[in-house]
Length: 89
Image (cartoon, rainbow, N blue to C red; front, side, top):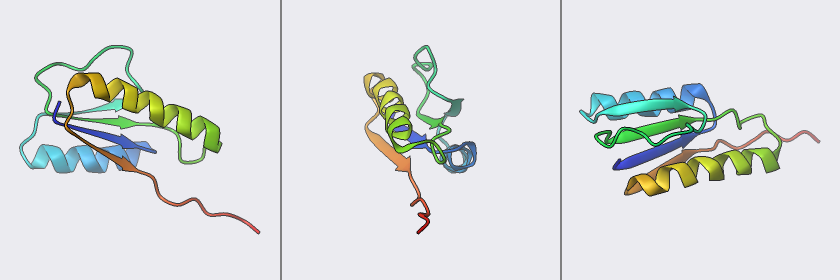
């Protein structure tokens, strides 16, 4: 896998996966961190997390798990979509 994407929601992962697929890369989107490695022929993979509204500690744990899943698959570039959270006063 050349490119790995970690997104904080399904829509963000879908947007990135579509862009990569339209660029001609063999691409897959995963809902959550899969229990198995991706197909070795895959060029790009996006992991959709439910971390946007999760408590910060949970969001970090989910994101690190996704990163740990991507790293052993040889990806050379990673992207994370993490918009700023609104805070209330």
